[in-house]
Image 1 (cartoon, helix red, strand yellow):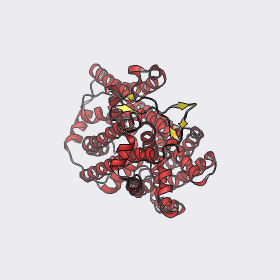
Image 2 (image 1 turned 120 degrees about the horizontal axis):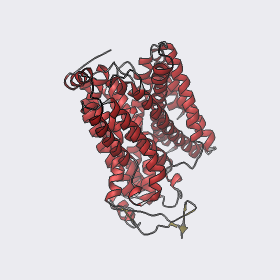
Image 3 (image 1 turned 180 degrees about the horizontal axis):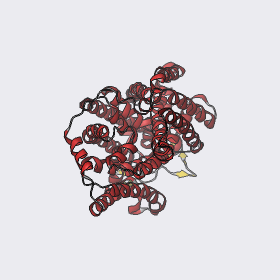
Image 4 (image 1 turned 45 degrees about the vertical axis):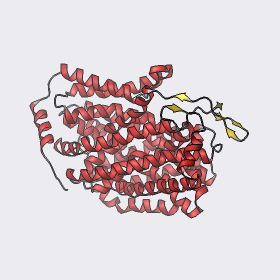
Length: 512
């Protein structure tokens, strides 16, 4: 793992000079990414430690249904995002003032003089990416404390400092290059543990047979109910206790499938679309990304199911269940190879947290600092503010991550809903409906983002129909608001309409 960390730092140093040349290089790599780096970088930065710890943990704790319907939603969302959004956004972001951040693109799309849209977008990015970065720090803290037996808080801070160091040095190019490597490491780590787990468990047939013995565990329309007291699953005669299977109805399936909607609003993925050197290369990127996601999600869910069969009483809280990948890896492999596999979790964490920190920092420096506070700011000043902001966000994220009982899946799901509902609808409307107005964009972003908080904190605790994942109602609310407000507000200018048509019909292959 030390060797792996050294390689990542080396990548940061390699790109340090280029990153310091301009804010465009630091924030979007000068739009110079190739198709493989774009695909692997987008998926690695998107999936994070959630793929190797959060998703297997859900499968270990609740069984097949919750994990597999979430995975299906994510797989479909990935494909549709690459198919419909990627090329149009690459072209449109270049035409719309050569935008290099998501707030800039949305603001330029509507020809704002007063940067209201950009400011709202930047504030939501700061809020949700700080939470997202915290989930990554939780992952690395759990990983290091489990492996080395040291205090979680110390390990979390050490891991966070490492991520901050290389992101601070190398910017977007270092982040993208390392994300490619990390995507490869994550993929093979999942596949190796999957294959070894099937062998140790006695084959697929034996796994299914044992899984079916737990009520609701291996069921698409049921869910396992661990018997817990004070958050700890109870044991009797060496076996973990489960209650009667819970129902997994149509509304719950819609709720978990709606994870796929989040992709349309994920800045870390959308930014990779904007950064590729030629829009036509996105077809190859889409194929690579789709295959990577399909295999990786399948492996992650299966690992969680196998883990419960092989180690039924090893992890007795929902938070602890997210360490099943670590437990299987350390038990299956000799220490040297286990270390390489464990680097997959570190890779997943690094590849996401660097993206989150960089995009959040750029949202402040480019949109709020340069756009509102100091419009005449030099490029060097913007670079400086970006790096200072990166440090401040990291400190706040570490404070959020200080609780070792945090459940990664829960933290990620809230931030995912926030981005999906705030940016997903307006991104789709901006790219595909030319009658969308500036007022509609503002209303849609605010309503989507606010509804995530209202549904999560006020309505969801009521249960029943309100128990649905907050992304779905917030996404629908934003779409409705954008449609209504755009229909009754001042129509877009001819310049905006002409630019929309240009982005729709013109293939720009700009290489910088």
